[in-house]
Length: 106
Length: 106
DNA sequence: TGACCATGTATCGATCACTTATATATATTG
DNA sequence: CAATATATATAAGTGATCGATACATGGTCA
Image (cartoon, rainbow over all chains, first blue to last red):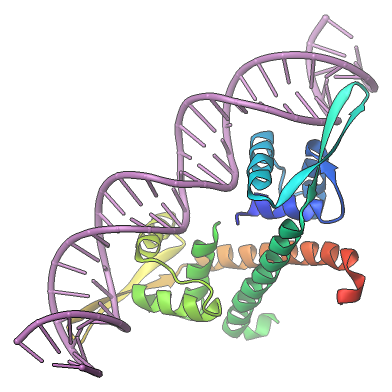
């Protein structure tokens, strides 16, 4: 799973969001380091829906604009959990090696 | 930076290694969850060398087989450090949201 | 002896997520 | 009236990775 996909699933962890709302939430949760592009987001949502990790939630019209909401499926939640554990393990493994290399920087 | 690349840089953090040694170290540091394929490894080493993140170290012949060693450059070390910090931040952001979702699982 | 596996490096074609660019539409702000 | 924010959508191109294959040596096992 690549980073934009991981960020989309994370943005949906706290509840259903529409596409543009996911883009904003990803900006926040990445500390403004990642701004999802529309091309990435909408193709990823289609792909994740086809994979069963995400599913349509509801549609709303706000100020004359359509909002299409998505939510995590149980499988999507499980995928996010295992991917998160994986990321943490990799970060920890790298940090261990970096600390061994620079003991005084600790 | 994608995961195999991150793992290769991590494997080189503790000192120079040759290609096959990197594959083995990646298996260990990923808890056997990732087995680098030769195609990924050698093309990545060429690319990282061209990018200046990695450089040739030395060559040895052991049991009639050539070993080509690589080491991290200062730029490669910096890239690994910033990528590691980034991974940790993403993992933490996701964990925070997952814990909020399942308070009893803590 | 012959097969198989581990070691070791290398390259090619295919895949696929992502980027870039573009399109369309409404509401708000200067 | 132009620019920006909101909101979704798609097509072409890029590039790292995957999968397969190639070649060579050394050790093990039947």
